[in-house]
Image 1: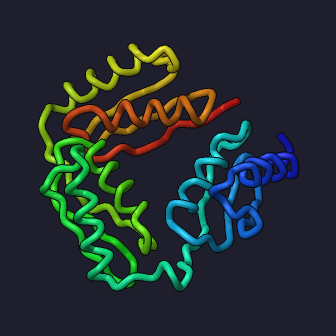
Image 2 (image 1 turned 30 degrees about the vertical axis):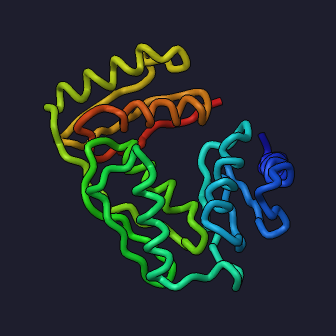
Amino acid sequence: MQNVELVDAVSDELYWDPRIDSDAVAVSAAEGVVTLRGTVGSLREKREAENDAKRVFGVELVENELEVKLMDRFEREDADLRGDILQALALDSVVPDTIDVTVEDGFVTLTGTADWQYQRDEAEFVASNIVGTVQVINEVQLKPKPTPGEVRDSIRGAFQRNAGLDADLLTITTVGGTVTLSGKVHSWAEHDQAMDAAWSAPGVLEVEDHITVTY
């Protein structure tokens, strides 16, 4: 797909999403890499704009350079924002009580420990949806458990069970709690499924993404 066509397709996708102020988002593209620039009113809007762009056929990578600028009525005192985030985390049964929060000028930092990556993701998702959050920095640490061989076998098994993935096209290497995925997939949906499978394996502390999306 030509760069101009890709820009038009992504712009149309943003326009049809009522959660996005598409007039505030500038889209550019170069060889499958789409860059989003501009200013949006919430961290959630920034995240949804990136998700919209990733759905478009031909997009290989999204560089999300959108800035979050809260409208005056959404600006919060740091202490009030921290209290609301802590309450939201406490009400979410997925998030462990070992996760803590600090806030400075709307920038939220998550710290503590979790057993699983999905718990880290859930905490970040919850915090990013609270009004007043400008950015979430996720420093929650995962507790290492299985051996690298067990981690690799677990991920390989998840790939083979997933009908949407061609496991033979993906390579898994493990060093300590770090997993590196490489190889090819045919869409961002397959890419995300592979990444989710890797992060879902017990003992994974970090996933390095070397997967190439080819159409």
